[in-house]
Length: 192
Image 1: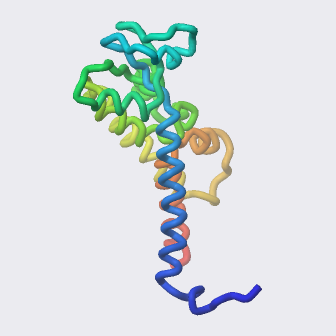
Image 2 (image 1 turned 30 degrees about the vertical axis):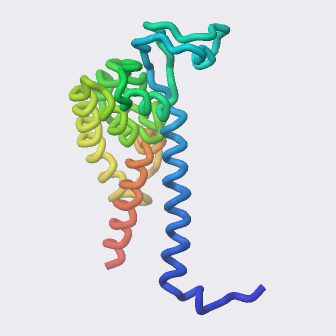
């Protein structure tokens, strides 16, 4: 196997390789959103779609409550017809909000949803009463950001036991990215 050094050092080649990785990551995130379930209540009868309920019914009856995949619930919610009402998914429930208010650092967002913030923003755009969800997202982010920066600044110089390990395990993907950026910045600063 020979290496083509002309393309190896080519900026266009490097950018193209990174674009492929970014497209893969974007596709993975979109797939993750699509499998998320959103509690939905149908406002009308829907003939021939009973299979969505997972039972033997042929039709969906008005008032039926079904956890639909995000891609379907968002499509129906944004249509010009009022097919359904969406409810807040369990990852953003009152119980989770109360836990975040009590102690934001001890809630393991990754266990709720690996893309908790991103999915929360997307779902809040679909909900009529979205102010409370947006406030929860903002509260969690601002309080947890302090811990993320602290851990990133001292990465490798402190014992990774207890709180640090638990907190890192509970970070969602956005928080992990911020942590790695902060740790890399701190390491670069130490080299100066």
